[in-house]
Amino acid sequence: MISRSDVEHVASLARLGLTDEEIERLVPQLSRILEAVGTLSAVDTSSVGPTAQVIALENVMRDDVARPGMSREVALAEAPIREGGLLRVPVVLEEGR
Image 1 (cartoon, rainbow, N blue to C red):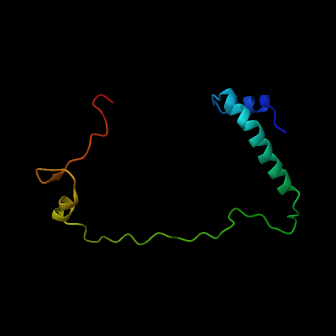
Image 2 (image 1 turned 135 degrees about the vertical axis):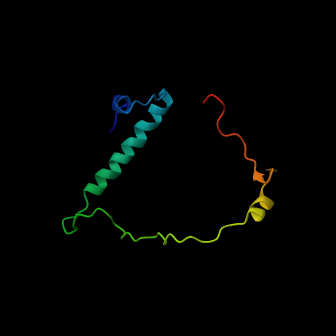
Image 3 (image 1 turned 180 degrees about the vertical axis):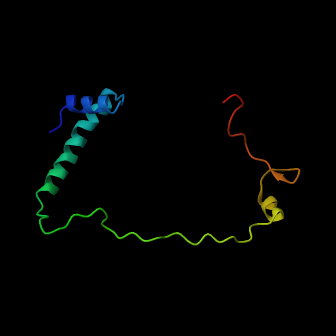
């Protein structure tokens, strides 16, 4: 069972500023998680070899082949705001940032 001081200590190590409500909520949640891990540790895995990946990985990347893209006219036709043959987009960064 995890105590309130355990949660406060871990939060301090992780530099998390938790509220009293969050700490109270985490105490039983973390206790249940540790109980579940404890249950898993009771399973006999002596016949299971060590592994780093349960599901085999496969390369899902395609070849990098240049293909013709969308024409300027088509792209501008779908743009909500056009200006002088270009797309106009909202400001993302404010001046001075």
